[in-house]
Image (tube, rainbow, N blue to C red; front, side, top):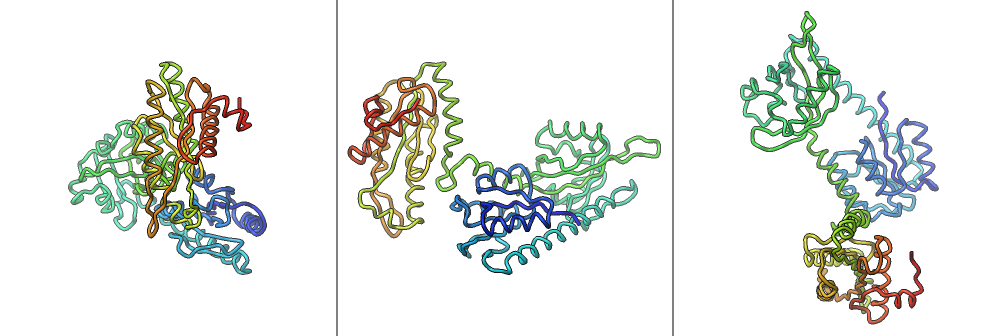
Length: 433
């Protein structure tokens, strides 16, 4: 029996910890991540057969979008909760289980054992398809899901299965036979890599590369191949099987996006923003140009949005993010910090007047009415400004000082903008280095 790989995303406390111990008794590969963000990072680097996610986790607000992406890769997902906080509307889940139910542990174990049996069967089918190609005289089978091929050492295609014809987007087998296998690679370096591995090891396993179909579309394939030798010991051909992994590549891209972007607004997250800001400040040190940080804190006078519910609050934040982004130049950076706060970095400015012009524009667009059916809401923006190099040379210091200025602007009149100064620094009792 081939053991499955299980990703367990939960805070290991109470029943969650008991379930983790239960899983580790029955399966050899159980990886624990204590947040969805860490789980997404793990998924970028390793494949898991089953993903178990707790709805009680601290960053559960990411769950809906995370499940949507996992669904694209057709991975099995089991949702659990110690407090019965599972919504039935989550997409792409195999089960939603309450750990308080005494039968839940057995039910989870049953599903995992079924997944293990399924994996074992799939592996056996793959081995059978590969064994069918061992003999140089054996014709390629057309009844398996992988695309099978046999090519000459120079890459000319000698034989192909009907599945391979479909993968290549060809009208028939005759259009494939005689074509050069390596000419279909989108990147010549990948073709060189394929031939280099084969000349060294006489086989390759799981090599992923992109090809151009006859229609002009591009797809990603995973290739497993080996050399076939003649009685004299010379390589007479190569045989291999190709699997379409285009969906998985898109899935990996989506996971990468989640790691660097805020799911709700689509803006870069703080980590990605700081990386970009460090590069920009390095350029500013060299060029002597002015750069500025603007912390934008959204608020409201009436409190209606705060009482409206999560869906309308999220809609307003999404609208605010798009307004801010559209008002900036392509060379500027913007990110969502947390809650109702955003951060903007301006670069290549001539004077403070340019900074204040942008701050005034941002104030106006954030003060305009937001519509989140069936209601509309009026917000205000308090903007704090710190300027490089006047207010510091380090990113963290500049960011902190723009926050101090934003807080002062909010306390003063709940709206408007303010440039950082030592006076407001002392007044707020804030100390930074």
